[in-house]
Image 1 (tube, one colour):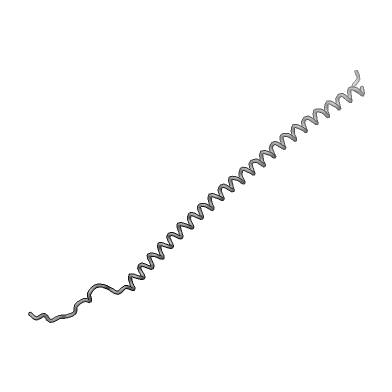
Image 2 (tube, one colour):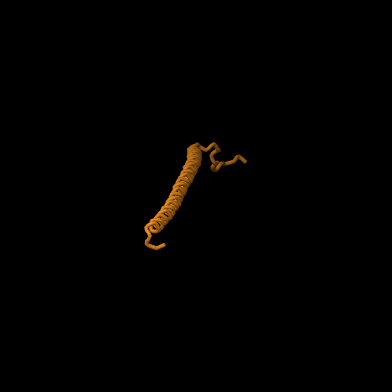
Length: 102
């Protein structure tokens, strides 16, 4: 057998082409798998971000309600203090000097 035999050259080239095609197919599958994993991770992080945003909105609403309660209490206290200052004193006036008949 000679190295320049056309059948050997065709067999070698066919083997090399089949090997290259197999490697390329495996590489494409690995790349697609990694890309799919990356997309899944992005979707998961987006849903985690959405969950976190929902919890943050709920916390802000709770804080707003508590601040409104505090301000309502402050208004009530201010109104009571204002009304207390405006009411006339119910106590008797302080007596002045009196001459006692003794």
